[in-house]
Length: 207
Image (cartoon, rainbow, N blue to C red; front, side, top):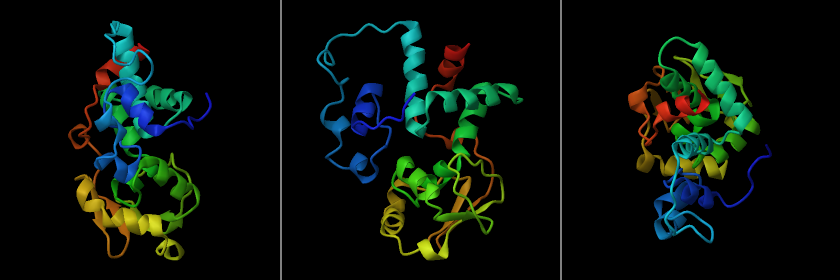
């Protein structure tokens, strides 16, 4: 499946909740979901009956779009989570949270996951002193993430750090905004993920 290049606000409206794909705009009055919270399209405001399959499909699509993954990528994460010990749904969310692009976003170095992914691909960050340009890299406890010296003057990173207080930093991460570096204090747990996700529906979808 090709990468989605259409209007991102349309995805929020389709999934019925804010996915925070547009950075600052999602927190402002200009947010399209605040103006038109119904499904886009000619029949968006009509009464739509959703089947059990449709409910599970929408939950899977919501989480996949939230983290900016294609279907094949998302399925690989699910298969990996299913092979691990513990609850499959929780394992899936933990794996998604550990992605390097997500950690960069969570630390406040980017205004959205899409922007974080681009910054990572361009090599603006390092882990434990080593440049990493793979958005899918999985961080571990104790890893130190920092903006590379030559990238500390980049405007998008500075603007994102200036607004980090509004979004907050998860408990499992630690940020030193003066030094432009963060640290993974612990592995993410289910209670650290505050978005309204029903991961059991995703497990049922793939089952």
